[in-house]
Image 1 (cartoon, rainbow, N blue to C red):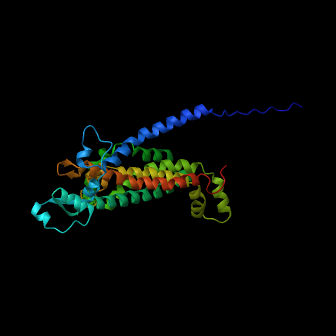
Image 2: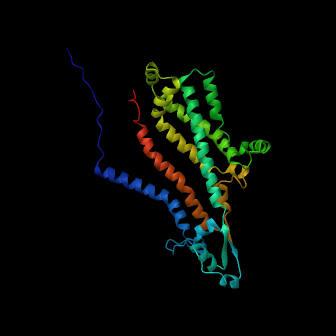
Image 3: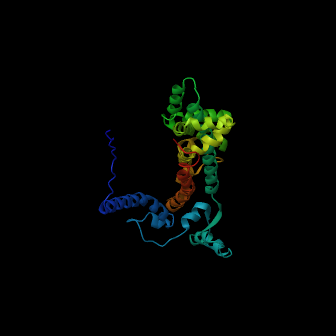
Length: 318
């Protein structure tokens, strides 16, 4: 009897020279993409004169003036009044007095930053929560006109936000949701839920139905099977979707400019209007931008572990 001949594809190991070239290219690309970020961080520690100097200064004397201007408001006073004041109690006060000014109080950056945290994370939780339930329904049940509904959900992402900004503004004004955190959370959730449904449906489709059927044979209800079987398997997709939704809500500018002005204004519309005594205060703008990057960076780094863990978490896949 003739034996079958099995063939296998061989994997050619890259040479040491190829690895070295690939490593150099990756490092070069990383350095180039990091230049704008590094420059923003450096500008936050420059004085206003150094920030606009030409040619640009790479070596400079660090200063926290930009961060002081970001978190405080200042008023100009006479030299006699400044001389009558007690010694400065902080670096910001000392910097202000060196410019014949005094610290008048805190700025609006901290409240705007807090609004960004509440609105972005609140809308992310809602959009991912509703998205995972809708995606599970589309994936597991026979929904009438499912393909048409999925296309309609996707079509809400096809138009630019500014195209619907005016109708939303008029509707929010009538409902009393203009310039409120709740209104912005609901709006960002409605915009993000379409992305959430489409991304999560793909992940849930990859989870075999047999796992849920086996769980329900063991006595689980549909909801228990969804919570204990499907959700752990879909952890990777949920985390990835949450990151995308958070990035959109965190950086959104058009709706924030039109629908907020004070109480619910987020950081993106506030940072560009930081004005110094001689015009745009670039060190303060760079300082605000640097701090604005921190939460989204920390969120992504923390969930990166769950992204890797979610691949093998739960039952063994087919």
